[in-house]
Image (cartoon, rainbow, N blue to C red; front, top):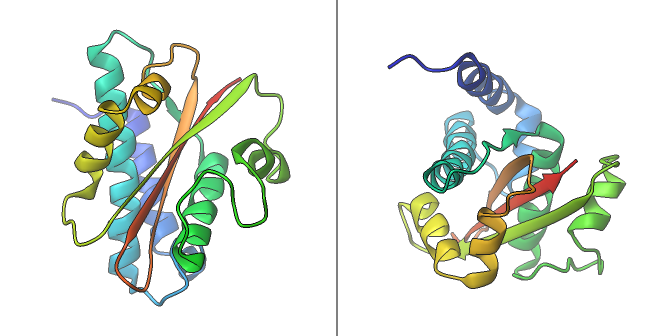
Length: 171
């Protein structure tokens, strides 16, 4: 089976981003090797891909990856990992729409996010999607017909907890 050009471009951009030393700033406050950052980039793509597969099984549109949303998602996952909290409202009191607006993401009709965290789990990407699908509100986000784009950000805390932020947007 041939991989669509979009996926090749996405994998290339994730690889190029992951090889950048600046990429470490998006993932966590602890030091990661380039290989670990590349693994996190691939896990972000894996969550994104698994959600798009669920959507395809439900005859829904494919969500386009948005790198600006990914930066917002990575930043929020890092904030949760660094400060040790897990909720949609940041320590600064801001919600996903505030974070997107501050990042210059405008002209959207609606925006939402799913969050997940786990400790000592090797396969957290499929677990995150499975847990979201078992929750009414998170499943509604995944299966919302209005979303047009999405992105995922992952961070790992010093204690090993993995924080996943998946942001959805309708333009």
